[in-house]
Image (cartoon, rainbow, N blue to C red; front, side, top):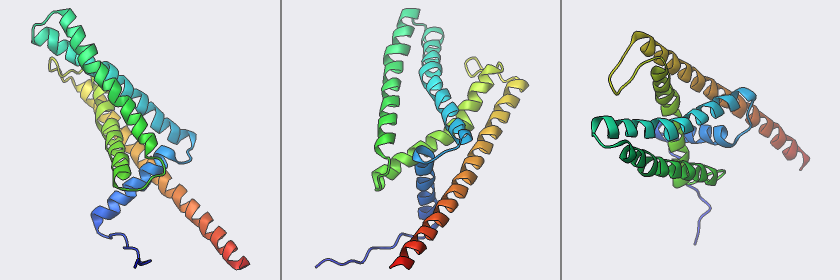
Length: 193
């Protein structure tokens, strides 16, 4: 005998935060957007591709040739074939699984959206500031930390935090508006019957 009773969702802090992040990423990845939301999503995505396909192989090439002493040909093969190819494949897998999670519920689909959230936060708070740090003359290999590079990296991290805050407030505004419209439609539908 089956029961129509469903288990209510857990109400502890971790469950609520996880559910909020899942709903936020569902809105951010698949929901309606303004031009500013599209810009805050598209530019970091483009910079993420540039970082994964440009920076990582370049650092591997530098380490392989300068610090490990291999020839430029070996460095090229290691950077492009052993690092660049698999990272490009991982980008394709990331894009496919993000689209596969669209509109689906369950642990695995929520985990994909949560990993996308962590990637986006790491991108706007870590990777983009690091790229601007490099652009201003800072470097990890060899270690160079000029004040202007550190300042530009800090400004980029602040801009990333501001962008995240804007996306969160926009998500709350739009979800509130959609909930109010759904309540009005539900009341109108209920008054007919």
